[in-house]
Length: 155
Image (cartoon, rainbow, N blue to C red; front, side, top):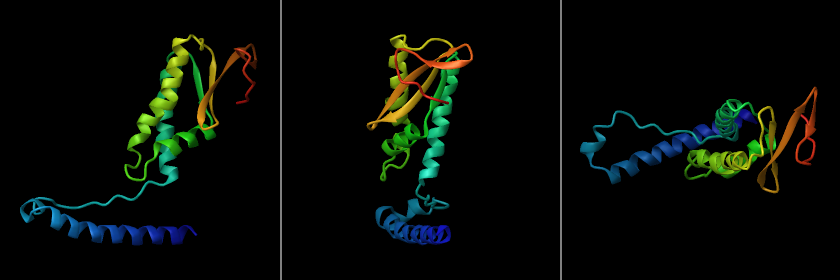
């Protein structure tokens, strides 16, 4: 199955490349096209690539939270939700950064402004009803206990 998907991708890539060249010739003058050394057609990003991009963005946010002595954990469901809302077939992964900012970072910033987090807290972000939800856990001696009456979540 993987091999047929790769062959299909190669065929699609060749087809797109063969369509791009005549379109460029129709759109631009030969003087401009002669200045271009090579035309590169990029492959469409797969879900796994988008997930890796989201993981990198979350790692940056985790580092900023760690600087405040707060641990941020983001569930797989939350990561998938960010990929779902952050990908646009036309623009690719360009909206992904804005989606992570709007859905995750803004949510965390609002919680910080409301003093919902304390140093030593573990913040767990999960997906719920098409949105991200935050649960705050305290480090109570050696076990984790819920804060603010929120449901208990494991690691």
